[in-house]
Image (cartoon, rainbow, N blue to C red):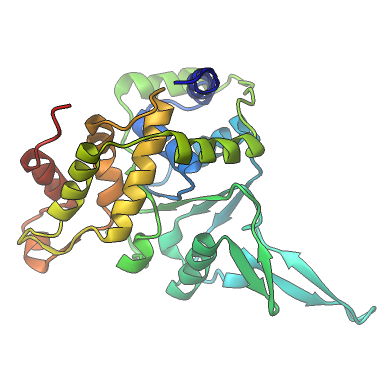
Length: 314
């Protein structure tokens, strides 16, 4: 890679070091969030309460000098509580815009599946369009803009599962795992430490790097064919009602390019495809009722597809 990219690769390493000053474990989740930010995507993060999602997101925002906001979703949360509203001043007779928390760089939407479907839809439409309409006027959101939405497992009470069409708007669905014994002990021991975080990137740099990833990272025909076959493989299975869409293929390609850049390469390889197949595809596969009854998961389907589709030899 060119010298500029080598410098960025070192910055990515420093970024990981800074994040791990405060965050323990779940390295794959951290990597997926960083990749999504630099690929222009959004993340759906499944986790039970108490796993440190807010600390993780705030720390990532701090290392990239991004403005951070958080929304706690509840059944009575309205779209205007997220997007903003036009207020009327009785004294002056004038209207003024009150921007909502969506006007930020990194937005943590906590427990999105506790919000009503109408509120979810308004948020995800704004997330997709990168703009909102308030009082008949359209306002662009700050750039870069990334949403990290968390949800509880659907088995928990009082939740509204995201429709399949809404799931597809997220680049990744990552799952936070419980920490190992050693990791949990490390958290307890370091809890009292006030760890300072260095800023490694800033928003203008993120936008520049996004362009570099798009323009400088190549993907060979053989690796692209492998990627497409993996997505296609999720459609042609009897356990599945709906597999990965063409949108999944496009998003998958953008993500593997960002991962290659993150790893210090100017080309995508089969390993990039394998490593991102699960977070890219698990929320885009709809199982049929029989599969659910037998306890089959979308991760099971992806594993079978990866075992069947031969990666390129080069």
